[in-house]
Length: 349
Image (cartoon, rainbow, N blue to C red; front, side, top):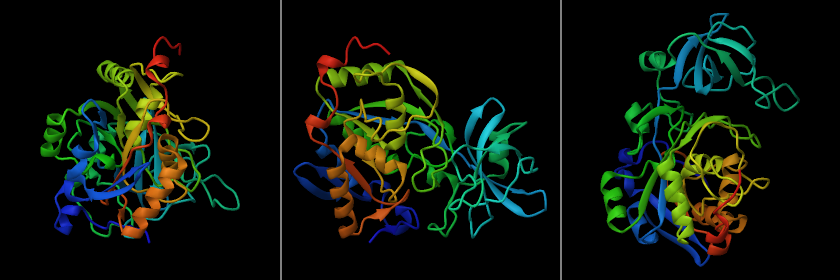
């Protein structure tokens, strides 16, 4: 049975790094705590973390007819254009599917392609491209609150939704795979010879319909990270992404053959059956609902059999789902880790 975590682990009497950790390997499933992570990684392995900070992306507003609404600011598409989702006000927080272009909460330009468009199973547009004049960051700081769904009944302060790596504000929802990390755990990992590198990907809203592709998101892979990833792969060590956001950023910077180049911009990359992982050879993740595009990404890294076995074990053991829940470390066999040292050099884009 899948149970969502309805509050942060600190409210359940645990430290951030005290959540449960399932380690999925070709030899079987291991159960422990997140504090055990250094024991499952080898010296020279590289952890890639996301430095994006969570913003107060849920801003109350009013529709043209006076009804209240929550605007979820998913991310910037262009200089004055944002991707937004409209939701009913708390506590229901349901999807708004009867909005129309020109509404005054923000200036809705057009429904975003493929996200809740009209059809027998989709009652109306859900995601919108919106024209915005003004400082969105200031608006969020003054009036916003963290995006929250019905399985978390109590509001929590924005600090609850930050990871220890957060440096660059911009994520509509927390890059939650990194939430269990603490400064002490990072120190222990470095002392054990595990390397760390950073990327930035500003995560959009995660409230996608079953089968929908992930939304466009802004990312950056700096030169130092690209160099570390390439050297790690050449040495035959693992590149372990912390979360689907770090995975998407790295893979968006990867050329055929698996070499990573410094890159930044808006990514629409969909990692899955049509585009397997080229770079990432291990993954730390939370637990995602069936049908979510995140599961296709996990499978693209670790293989269908290992992901299925991990989820089955997690359900049987009562692991908690979603951003405040438990964690998984996927360590696929070496043969499925992508390119070898011989084919990650000298590749053309």
